[in-house]
Length: 508
Image (cartoon, rainbow, N blue to C red; front, side, top):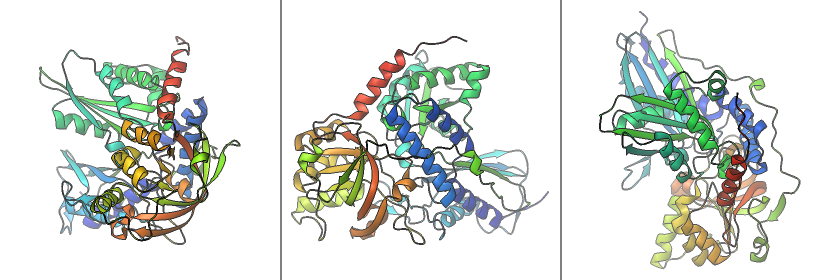
């Protein structure tokens, strides 16, 4: 029986997190390519094209596919007969060290998103540790490990309930998915845990997302169990909602639905659902004492021949000269190409701004939002000759409570972010005749290529949450909420739900 070396585990964990930062699993690429071929909504098709193009660019450049490089989650199946060679750390410590090395790698530094003291000071750990680790002790002398990088946008949409035993699980899922909004970056997967206790259901939901996408194969051969029937039912009913890629309305909202179950109390039906986003990232390996694991890169042939290009009717906008009159002419769903200077800011920066304005101190020196646009983003640090690392949008609803303040007190003209806006933000946008533009979540490396210069202008100590000034060239966005308050995230899904309902069902 070979002994496992401490450095082999550390190195393998580090390599795996680097690997999944820029390589999608092949099953996800295949499923997304099929969704692209089938998609009839032009807005959704454009969004999927951006995600596919971004995926290939990230693989070629070995840079993160999403600026949110995720919270490190590790599942460990530890053999009861495992022997160690020269170990001075606990398994937890080895895994944390592997995560630390992965996220601080000089050739592909990943964004540090983990904050300590979460209910109070929320201080960034700077190296994305600690990881969240789950253990299962099993027979054997190997260690089987699954690593995943879970982005905040999708993780924030996790839901749990305890249904009555006679309630319909499928009905609850179909009701709850629209309430998630599009901040989880569809099209992706739904992981569902049924039974056990509250924490068991949540864990099963997360574990199920580590499985390979096989929905089309399942539908082709037909279900062979009640759970497989349920998977297909939920898949079909969720896609019939018409939410579509990025919530813009379309045929594909989910690529697969996974379900795990466990015996539960006779009076209970615990149900958890966790979505996986367009940056689906996980890898699996086994250590048997023969050395560290070398994960095999995908072949260039694994990617479909899809290359995103701006549509011919896309409108170029000069951010340095844009006026309220111009933005009032923009229509929901219209494609714009942004050019000029763009300020950034997300949760922490908005809170700082509010505190400064409430205290009467005003904005920091050099920060002026009057007549300008703000981009909700927390970019990855640049490497080599990059201007900025991957810089896709973050979920905009987190800034909804600050929107009226920004529009009324700073002279801000518009915002760029990810997914829909809530009623509070839409009302503020309508009131101030502003506008909200949406960039595609899951296309961070592609978006970063449109950024030609970058500098920090305030709150440098906040790291990726500082206020930057970007100069952009032909940055692609969609008008998501126009100056009258009309939202494409409401009109698009409504339209496509109606269209899908009219598609005839063909029996086998």
